[in-house]
Image (cartoon, rainbow, N blue to C red):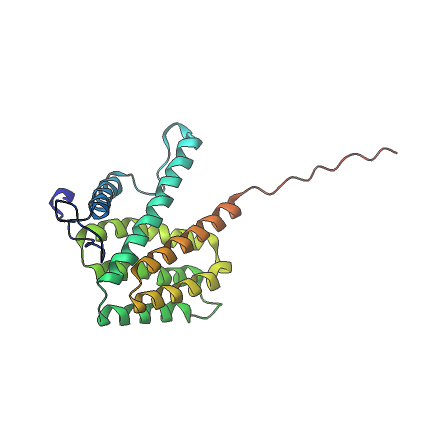
Length: 210
């Protein structure tokens, strides 16, 4: 039950930030409320692939945007908090996972390669060690996999470069940089998917008068 999950310790106060009278910084309190709302949303939402009642395309598109925003925010939170709680053990596990995925040959089955790349969010959640984040990551890991499948092998180099930049930021202890890298990377992949879904422009050939 989500009500039994204690997520008040998910993100600690940022260094040098003044605390509110409650003892926790206001930004920290807002992030906890947002994460609780996300967890409830994730558990209540129908499984991906379900049909939209009435075939409401506008509602379906709005739902896609909500899921995309959730994907970006949850992955960014995972990167930021994992960076703050990183240990040598998890840093090695992340390094090994990134290198394994990035070094797969170009001709390797794309779906299996994507599965290896998507494993990073699960490792970040493990590094955090918080059940609330695990609930959110469980919901978005499939979305991340499907997103990378949709953009296709053309994004292989982009994904590998981002993973290595993220790993470098985690090593440097740059929590905000790690979150920003995740946000920008996912935003770029989502843009690529939107472009690939656009219908090809129709060419209207005017009649030539003889």
